Image: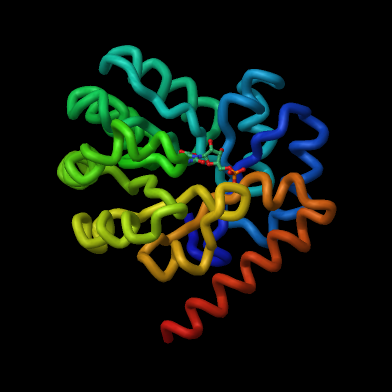
Length: 221
Ligand code: O7E
């Protein structure tokens, strides 16, 4: 995945035509499109192949099962053309290893959730988030998911993993986080859903977030 606008679109719509229209409309302002349960359950797994025409696809199935089931899920995801899969880290090292093994066979990426962006994410996951980040780095994952709603946690996770892993950060806009703050804290990409796909003009909304990030990167030099 190339770092250009540093935006990943979370395409959580449930209509195929709408999904394809938005993807085409905003493609110049996003580096990847995250596709998850809302869209796949509504339209089918093949939507991943269709959307891959516009941008690299991150399949957000937050895979969280025993190693064998994880392996079977990841095979389906990569066969249909996804470039990366999102996996939960709390299921442990063997479950994560299974995903990384399949991803490396397909030469694709695995992103591991270390802590979630919503208020409940602080309840059970945050206390083990740093251990999950360390495990993901040791296991050879490509990156981590860390919350834009808590930039100080992005900073902490960045300190733990150094430059070894990329960080993708959801929670911008609708959940209250700011793209520039997440990038300043050490995120490589922000994940943005409703603020783009629910905007009256999704392309304009994406371009404004891209401009905010660009200004932050210029400020940092
Ligand atoms: O709030 P929105 O509309 O900008 O959408 C955010 C997207 O990021 C949405 O798809 C949600 O499921 C996802 N997300 C979070 O909001 N918080 C998290 O902690 C983790 C994710 C996520 O995508 O995890 C994998 C990257």
